[in-house]
Length: 156
Image (cartoon, rainbow, N blue to C red; front, side, top):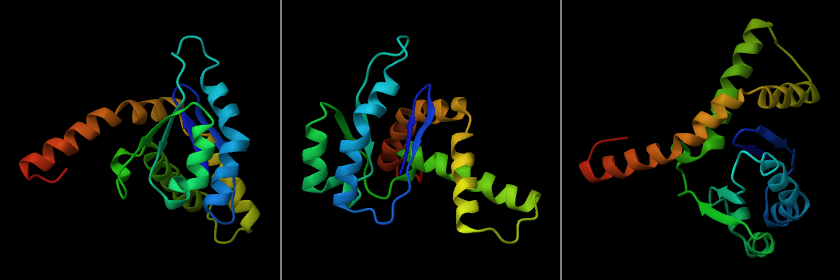
């Protein structure tokens, strides 16, 4: 589970074995207040408790919705299978390319699962904050282009 925030970058990466409603509602209860406080600690940025979710069934479960309701957070649901308007999916693509390039550059042919996890975490936390901010800032423009393309019959 990875959380990003404008002007902060990657603020959390937590491993999980199975993404289900029990895990996700617990994740909300354990982390969201802390995550929102990190995001609003910079006085130059207006306070916001916006959670963007991608309609994964674990996130839309009754348990998750009850946990979210207790947080006084604004919920924004991205349509299913819409990676173009999901900021974290864009960041995952950047991290995936960096991981592949690093494996080539370092001639990695074999690594333990722990070594791979460590490399993934390092890569995620090393993603440039300006890239994350640019990705977040581009979402409204991307949504407008998708709506425009739908009306015109052109592919986005």
